[in-house]
Structures are given as structure tokens and as C-alpha cells.
Length: 212
Image (cartoon, rainbow, N blue to C red):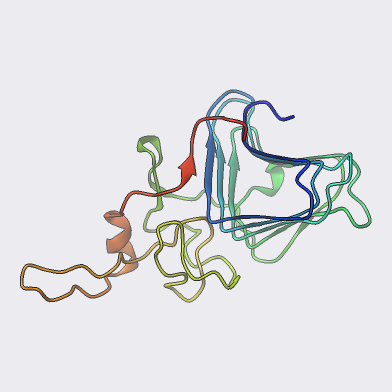
């Protein structure tokens, strides 16, 4: 239903949960995450990037009854639009964006959207996006800017949260798991900036614009 979408939730009834994932689309006019003909959907600690010309990070089509799409602690960045909503979104059908990183000016379409507390518009900073390393870099405004959702680990299996608040997005910037040193003693936790500078490879994210 949504050509070029990395993940397309079409006709997925019941309660849908998209959590702890990184979805990247690179094609012209592509979409990282598309939701339509679905029921209640929660998007939590996800990184949505659409980098092609005319692309959209999150597309919500409510013309046939998508209900209660709630986005929390999520990075949303599109080449053209961060969020696109289509259809009449009133009554029990709504789109709520809270404690997430997106540009309000990048939210467009028919129907109202609710901008919850603590959203930020500053650009997230990654270690090396061009090289495929989407760990959060030191100084990223998304660090310690999320809200607690009861999620214990990030996409790498590292604890969430490490700072006073969880980070926005799939990655929690912080120290890796303890590892042995040459003397056989374990290395303690390192600072967030130091650990972010030498991250482990991310697991479980898709780049190719493939419809599931």
C-alpha cells in the first residue's frame, strides 16, 4: 500500500507496538514507517530517518479508521516531511507526538496532531550516519531528553536509562557492558561521551526500502 516504505503496517488490527528499532529509507519519495488501515499503534524509542528527496519519516493514513497513534521518545527526520497525516483525524482517531525529536514545521497533512510535552526540534547528532553508525554522538540534544516508558534496555542491550532521563531514539548513549582487562579485572562504566565515541555495532535496523 505504501511503495518504498521500510515498514508498512497495513491492515494490522489490534494493538501494534513498534519499539527499539531503527528504520532508514534512502530512496526518492520513500517512507521509513507507514501506518494505515490499522488499529491502535504505539511507537516507542524508535529512530525514523528518511533521507531521499521528497521522503517522509512517518506517514499516517487515517482515511479508513487508523486510531490512536502515539509516538514517544522517537527521533523523526524526513527529507521533505518528518510526519505526514492523511485523512480526517477527529474523535477517537488521533496522532499524538510526545517527548520526541521532530520539526513542528515538518508535520503536515489533513487533520490535527497533538504535540505533547518536551518535544525538541534540534537536529540529532549521530556518530557517523553516512557510514551507518547511528549511535548518538556526544552533545546530541536527544540525550537525556526522553521520557520513562518502563523499557529496560536499548537496541544494543545496554541499560536504559543511564542518565537522569532516557535518551530519545533507539540508542541509549552510554557505557558498554563490562569487559575483562589484561590484568583480569573488569573495567567499570565509562562516561557517556567517552562511550559514545567508541560504540559497538548497532543490531536490528533496516536500510533497504523493502515492504514487509
